[in-house]
Image (cartoon, rainbow, N blue to C red; front, side, top):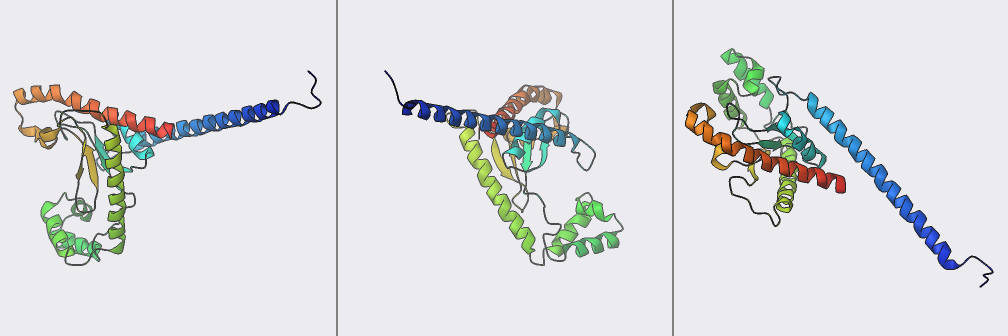
Length: 242
């Protein structure tokens, strides 16, 4: 059979192949970009230190990275411990750029209270000087909240909604014991929250535990950590798939 011109189906097939190849290349390029972003986020997390100079716990670094790359900006975390901190893992989520003042004129009030009590202002701000902090907060709260703080709280509400939806997806068709299941607890008045598990263990005063209680807790903690790690892997997969 002789064709005077190239068969149309060949041209269409060729164009389709070109389009599919281009789409695959785009996916590979996007994947590479995400891998770079993932590696960079881990490097960034490696350098983070808290006010006491402590770095992020090794056992929760990847989970923290996964939170951030899924749009859940973090402000603290703990992998869970038997001798300090909490007996279950947690990741704290907070919208970035928290305003310095919750109440109008708050900085000046804290400064005056610190001066009157003869204590460092920074320690009052961080709540290390409890009496001074309580007095400064009480006096500050007589004023209205700043517009910036109210906007920041609204951003945190969006984050808690997003985290709730992600947890709902994670637990779809999955049943776990109540103390193992991750939950959300708000921290403070600004809408900052923590994703954690552990049930009553999350609230334990570790310094008051007997050796027998510590031994039992030692058996439960790895289960809490495994669940948090699983959620971190879920978030990582979601990040790379989208």
